[in-house]
Image (cartoon, rainbow, N blue to C red; front, side, top):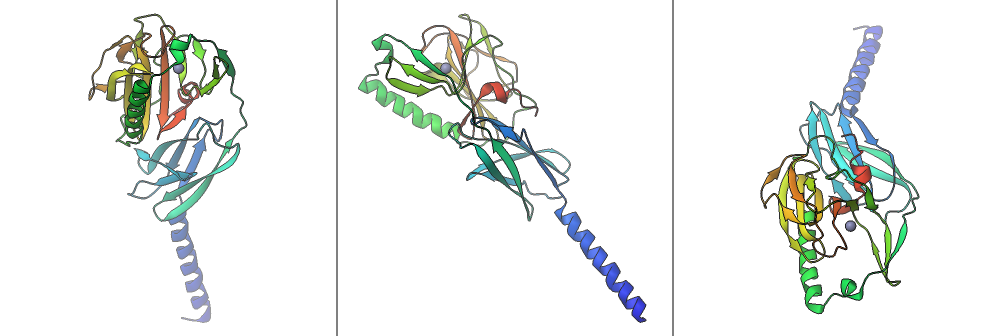
Amino acid sequence: MNKYGIVLFFLISAILLLSIHISAEAFQAEVFPSLISPGEAFIIKITEAKTSQLPTAFLDGQEFYFSRCGECCFIAIGAVRLESKPGIHNINLEVGTKRKYLKLLVKQTSFPTVNITLPEEKVFVSTENLRRVEIENKRLKSIFQIVSDRLWEGNFMLPLENDISTLFGTNRIINKKKISVHKGLDIKGKDGEVVKASNSGKVVLAEELFFGGNTIILDHGQGIHTIYMHLSEFNVKPEDIAVKGNIIGFVGSTGRSTGPHLHFGVKVLNININPVSFVKLEI
Ligand SMILES: [Zn+2]
């Protein structure tokens, strides 16, 4: 081999090595929407990922879970807490041996405040009931921490298409002293009106709770749960699989409620999500 041959050999080797390196690096990742409010969800989509392992994604110490969406395609639903600070948040992605950061911008958002006057007996909770609430909350927390296989398919839907009475994130001042933040969406409804499953999922709870009254929780997989409260009746039982749009229960006013309505909640890995924005996500 003459000196030109040697130069050509090294040149071809360098090009080959570079192309192998590029193909190993090559995966596409996007987050949408990339501008959200506190208490909203987002989608991470990874394509052209030549790996057999599921990717991982972390944001502010919280892991979000992927499922497959085709050949070399993975999808995860992430979320930011209602208390999260406005500004740029970095999503740390790991695909095979490769890492990438995606930027998510959380915008400054103000939530409404409402003053509510209730008779004292609607606000007072006895020591015995406080104990009951504590036990129920512990149980709910453990339900929301479970990450099951994906059952959801396509967009989520509102379980009842009526006017909204209280928005997600509303600060409630009750009898001028007690402040609570509304962690779901109140949808107006008539007693007995049908309530539909927001997406396909397993019934992990269908029973009476102190505050929520007759409550259904669906586990959609990947850490996503939807909650339906104050129902008059159930149309499902625990362990049932509800298909998106199926009637799971009926509007009522059970539990701490001042009239028939549906309290609809969405949780992504125990993070409360604004249901109105969640059903707009194009999954
Ligand atoms: Zn509510």
